[in-house]
Image (cartoon, rainbow, N blue to C red; front, side, top):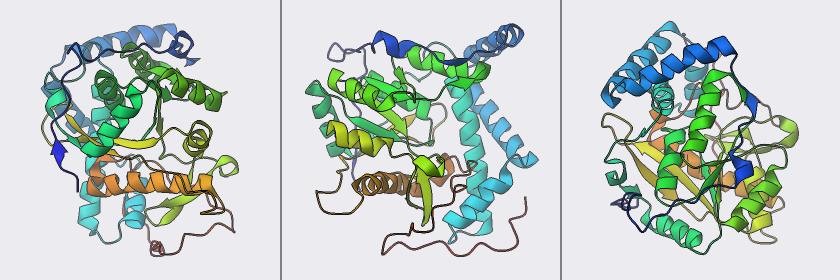
Length: 347
C-alpha cells in the first residue's frame, strides 16, 4: 500500500491559482424549486451555515441513525451487502449499512452550507498514492486536463472542492435535476469553481475541457439503462456502467485517475485523498472490447477503495438492478457472488 504523504500547501499559497471554468459551463440546468419552497429552504440553508461543523456532524449522525432505524431503503442496503460481501457476518453488514446512512446524512449536511465548508486544516489530512498524485499534477502542469473518476463515497461534493483548491481545475459531469436540494448543490459546485457538463453533447464538452486544461470529474458507480451501458465486474457481479469515461479517454488520450476522499475518522469534514493512476486502457489488439475493458479497470480501482472503507459508500443505491444481456459473462478469474438466499434479509 502507498504511504500517506503530507498534503500540498493550502490554496492561499501564491503557487496555487484557481482557474475559472468557461462561462457556458457555469449555467445551472434543471427545475428550480417553487417560490414558496425556495423561500422556506433559504432558512434551512442559513441554519445549516450557522451551525458549527461539530453540530452539523452530530445532527448527521442523528439523522443517519434515525433513517436506518426507520428502515428507509434498509432492505436494499442489506441485500447489496449480502451479495457483495458474503464473507461478512450479518452483524458486520448491518454495522456497515448503518455507517452508510450516517455518511449519506453527512454528505447532505456538509454540502449545503454557504461559505467555507471545509475545516481550516483540510490540506493537512494527507494523500495516499503520492506517485499517482504527482503524475496527475504533472499532467495538469502541461496545460492539458486529465479524466478524474470517483464514486458516491466519502463526500464527493467536497472532494471536488478540495481538488480545485489543490490547483486541479475541474468540470463535473452532472444531470439536470429538480428541487431545492439539487439546485443548492449545483449552485455550490459553481461557487467553488467547478464547471458543469450535462449529458447532451457531453463527449465533445469533455474533449474541449481537456484541451483547455480542465479535468472532467465523473461518478462511475451508478446503474445505467442496458442499451447504453458497459457491463463490468463490480464486487463479483456484472454491473451496468457508463462507458463515457473510456470513450472520452480513447478520443482525448488523456490519462485516467481514480480520486477518492476518505474520511479520516475525526469529526467534521476531514478527508485524505487516495489517488490511483494513471489507469491505462488496453493496448491495441489486447482485447475485443477496449471500451468495456478500460471501464472494468477503473471500476476495479473504485471497488478496491470501497472494500477498504465499505461504510463510506452508498449501499442504498440499486447498483445491480439492470440485468446484463445473456451473452455478457464475468472475465476468467472473477469470483461470482453466491446465489441469493430465498429469504431476504430482515429489514
